[in-house]
Image (cartoon, rainbow, N blue to C red; front, top):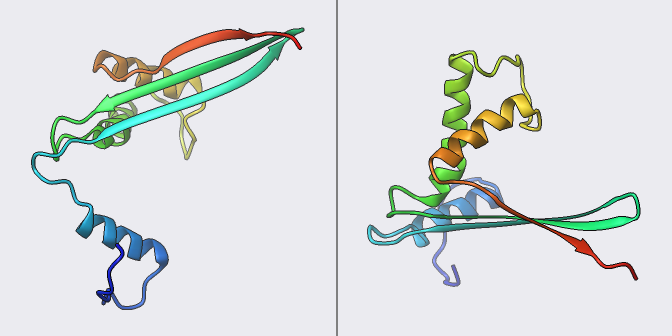
Length: 127
């Protein structure tokens, strides 16, 4: 990405240029594997008790075709589409997946496929 070779793509956005560079200069080679690592940390209080919840997910790709990114992005979408067709998700219209009726069956199927968040909760000492 640090060379002087011009990119002749016509009129395009910065996102288009970045996508082009990623696709051409950082493409996975056949023997490459990817890794998705996610960490979510939440601090909250219940009464006078402060708590911290740490949720982690690690997914490893098999090769340059069967990637961790495909498993963690494409698979949930495919599962959701199938559940809609099977009428197991009945909400109509556009929804973000914060409703239990949407995310619970998708997370359950992902867990059956070895993709799951591990959660750890701990107390935060008082000051």
